[in-house]
Length: 227
Image (cartoon, rainbow, N blue to C red):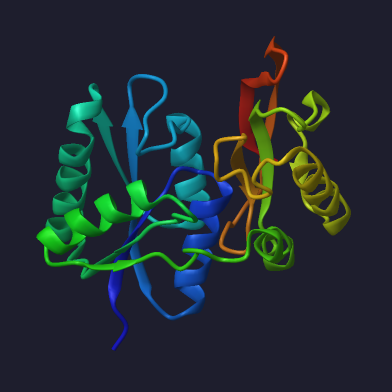
């Protein structure tokens, strides 16, 4: 009998791949959970684009639970509330997160899961970062780089959809040269999944590239929808 789970979902490549992995392994993904900080620079959560989260969830055919948090000290309470809603509404027995390297994230996610009697899954934990970037391509997960915050990653990558091994090899080459994490786990870039095997329709995004510093740039999204 498969286990019913929720997947912590930011809309980026790591949570997207986690959802894909859980489905491949036969888990019943009952819902996605997104925590939306109402401030910048959360240590625990990537700040998602809420309107696009709903479109991604719709394309994936999975219900979405959104919980807002207004202060950093309330971040764990927000996760606790969201997971409690998922337990009550969908009867989940586990929760999966796309943590790659952060002990801070993984320990806190696991702590709240254990407190609520849930099994915790982190299928990407300590995965080989370079191999993983190629696995995303092989899996059919396509994602856009929507922000850059790293020396060595050119602004030309902003707004680019990563969908081929050649581009991944270029990212890895730059990571080796300049010392940033090739999977962007250190916040070097933020991503947004636009297509995946579990999507019924691809998402198209338009926007404006804005350079805000020597090594920082943001893709300001002006329009999005199904292609």
